[in-house]
Image (cartoon, rainbow, N blue to C red; front, side, top):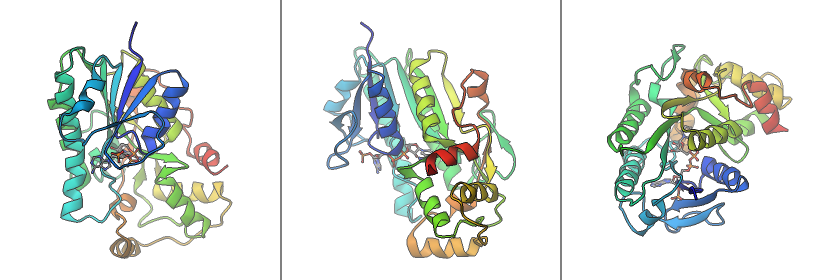
Length: 304
Ligand SMILES: NC(=O)c1ccc[n+]([C@@H]2O[C@H](COP(=O)([O-])OP(=O)(O)OC[C@H]3O[C@@H](n4cnc5c(N)ncnc54)[C@H](OP(=O)(O)O)[C@@H]3O)[C@@H](O)[C@H]2O)c1
């Protein structure tokens, strides 16, 4: 009988738990690779690992339908050398160790699905970026380049491989939406910086559907931009958010204020001030239909 077991490394988080819920509802068996002492009450059965060395957990990969890797230290933290090193290390090490574990399998999993980020393009202004666009510079671009290089280097013959380059995922229980919605609720939802930086976004429901497609469709391999076909400027995003939340115009937030807030709170100013304008070219070519292609409808669903 074909395997229906799916392993989600780093699956205890925002995207992973939504994906696990959807897979369990569809009848798949789901195991979550999670560090000891991390989140409990998971959707899916927890399997302990350290994200860096092959251990007992590696047996769970044998004869799996798919291994999905969502591991990585969150990037919204104070940008110290130590934090930046851990952001890169946690991503690259998890790819390398999963590659090593897959090579040791008697029956390797059928596919390896890796999340990365549209930060790959760095701060790319209003240039339209798709899968054929080369990487950008800066910490985010460098991180994503090393991350994707590790995936390319850990190729196992016969294992289908897809890289899902995620835009900003909008969901009620994690990621960028809850803090942005709080700002708008308190009448602080103005455009940030110049307001012209692009935001490539997608609804969590579409992120989950893209991972499910990558797991189940044999014709999906290589890199995919995973963002709605309608990226918007930061100014337009904040305006749509205020509309969805029935809030009036709010004054813009100068870049200097964001840098100051970043010093005080440790938030990563880059996340608000730089952007990418991405097109999910390959997903559209392969017939993927977004449930929420338009920002207004996505935000109304999240606010509602
Ligand atoms: N959410 C977005 O908008 C977005 C956008 C672009 C790209 N991505 C990428 O997509 C992936 C999933 O995103 P997410 O929002 O679901 O992330 P998340 O909620 O932060 O979950 C990531 C998981 O990685 C594990 N982890 C965290 N720090 C780690 C470390 N230092 N070493 C090893 N494992 C660590 C954690 O699992 P345990 O604590 O259970 O071990 C955590 O649940 C991430 O790689 C992220 O960079 C997300």
